[in-house]
Picture 1 (cartoon, rainbow, N blue to C red):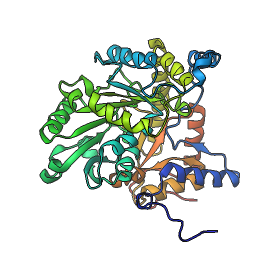
Picture 2 (cartoon, helix red, strand yellow):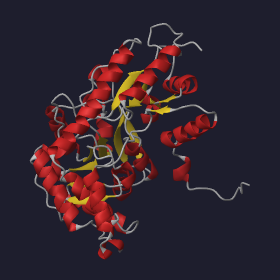
Picture 3 (cartoon, one colour):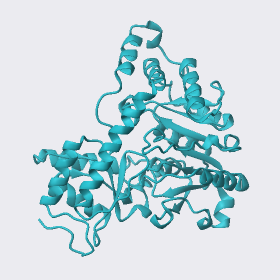
Picture 4 (cartoon, rainbow, N blue to C red):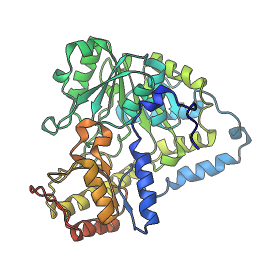
Length: 402
């Protein structure tokens, strides 16, 4: 029974449905109908976290001090591991006491940063398409979102010339993400230098989401924003252990960079949560200290899946460039279909779950995101089902037959 005077805050009614929650509903309905789903929708890594990580967590559970409230700012040991990892990975020196803050997953931190810094009416620059958390947090905070449209013609890189002067002068924060979710685009160092120059000129806080830093292929090494001179004076960078270390359900990430920005986020979080369970911080510390061969094995696994699926889709008419990073393919819809219809068509006819591109912003229309979260045997089954259903990429408006 619905009671008409029980109404949520306006900030909730302004939010569109969260695509992954909607996908969960559709998947549950499909399973009820007996469909064998091949779920390539969410960026939800398959398999276990590394055994040393699990062993460290189990051992930590036997230590009584780990069962109380953890420090608000995270354990000193985990913060030190974060700083060591950044110096090893990017030659970036961080003060673990003021320039690193553990988070309950990077999504939590991205959203709460907006609550800490965005006032109603503040302009927040967010690329389109983009990971939904980049614009949902600012929307909840009452910010005015300005979508910076990305295009295939510009290799899905931000074109600063498309941002109107008056918008740039009003902007308070710029969220961005390379290697990019959902487009898989990567950005050269020169782009990051231009971003820092742009932000310093217009006095904009930079928020870079680097959650796919280790999922890079063919010798490519992603750039950290903090490598760029002057970036730490105006920006922060978010990272997660969800993807690389198969720790999505553990909910652990961190933010590094400008101590003033981090302190604002920390102040907000002290009023909202008590930090990460100490056992999980111990496990995360162990993950960051794993030998390099672990990362190479992860990269090899995703690269193998990427190559296998791209080759199979090519036989069905798709010509998808090999992504240099991330765990996705950015797949154009057949001509004559929008992204929602194409994703539903695939689900209903084949049991394959993908994410419609328009879930990532208006400029994502015309694409679907495919997650490389299944082994090649299941990806092969997916290709087989597409072929049997007559789903191909072709110029004709009629793209599939029952």
